[in-house]
Length: 489
Image (tube, rainbow, N blue to C red):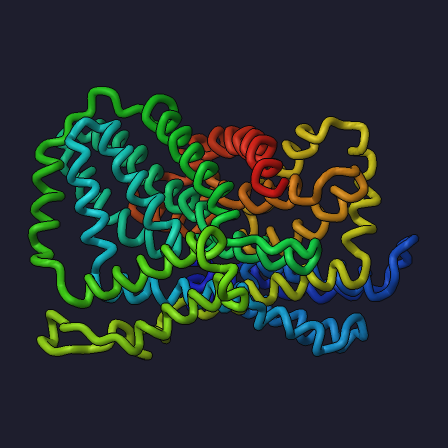
C-alpha cells in the first residue's frame, strides 16, 4: 500500500522550490492542453488529458498533499463540462473503496492489539543467526504481513526490529554491510508482499474495480490471489537471492545473539491477550470467507461479495469485546478513536484514481492514446508486456503507485484492443509492476522508512534498486504470460 511519508513533512515547514513550480505549472499545463488543437481528440478528452498532467505534476512535486490532489476531478471535470458531477463522484464510493476500508479497519484492530508484532517476532525467532537466513526470515514475515496490512505499517513494525538485529553485529564494516542488506530487504518485502491479495495495496483494488467497469470482469479475492501469491512469492525469493549474494552481500557477517534478542523481545510481550486472540479470529474468519466464497458457499448467497465480507468483519470489531490487558477490563476490539487513525486519505486517493480512470474511458482518451501506440502491433506480445512493465516501474518511481495504476490501466486496456490481445494481459502487469520502484527513497513509503534509519544512502539505494527494478520487468512479464491465461481463461 503506498501511503506517502515524504512531502507532508516538507510542507509543514514550507513548500520547496519544486513544489512551488509544480503548484503554478499544473493549472497552466491544464489550460494549454485543454485549448490546444489536437487532431482526433474532443474537447472533453483534452480536458481529461490536461487534468491527468495537472494531477501528475502535483503528485510528482508534492505541491499539495497527495490525497488532496485526488479531489481535482470533482472540481475540474464538471466545471469544464467534460463529465456530469454525478458520473465523477460515483467512483469515490466504489465497492472497492469499501473493501479497502474494511481491510484497513481490520489491520488497525490487529495493530491495536499488538498481535502483528507477536507474529513477526515469533516467526523471525525460528530462523537462527546465519545472516542470509535472518534476511530470509525477515522477508517472509514482512511479505506475509504486508499481504494483509498497509505496506507502510508493516515496514514501520519490521524495520525497528531489523535495526535491533543489525546492531548486534560487532564489526563496524560488517554492520554497515549487513544493515544495507537487511533494512533494504525488509523495505522491498513490504512492497512485494502487498501484491499478494486485493487488500494488500491500493493498486490491486483499483485493478479489480476497473476490470469490472471497463471489461465487465468480476475479479474475486481468490482469482487475484491465484496471480498475486505466486507473483509475490517468486519476487520475494528472487529479491532475497539478489540481496544476499549480489546487492549487499552478507558473507562473513557474524551476528552475536540474534535469536536470543528476538526471543527476549517476544517473551517481553507476555501471554497472548484476549484482544489479540479475538482480533486475530475476526481477521482469520474474514480471510477464510474471502478464500472460500467462490469455491464453496458463494453460489448460495450470490449477493455477498468480498466487500460485504470486509465490512461485516470490520463491524464485528466494534461489536465484539475482549479483555484489555492494560485497562484490565473488557473493551471493544476497535473503537472509533483507533478507527479514525486509519489512513482515510488513501480511500480518497483510490476514489480519485478511479474517477480519473473512468474519465479516460468516458471521453475516449484511452482509445486515442492507444491508437497512437499502434506501432507496437508488430511486436510479440511479450515484448509489449516488457515495455508496459518497464514504463510502469519508471513512473511509479516518481508518483504514487495508485495514481500510476489509475493513469495507465485505461490506456493498457485500449492498447490491448488495438493490438488484438486480451486486455488483462496488459492490465495485470501494470498493476503488479507498481510493487517495484526500489531506486529512490521517495519511490515507496517503505523505501523512505529504510532511508530514515541511516543505514542506507540515496546513491546506494539507487545502485541496489535499479538492478532489482530491471529484474522486476522480466519477472512481471514471465508471471503474466504464464498465470493470466490460466486464471482468466
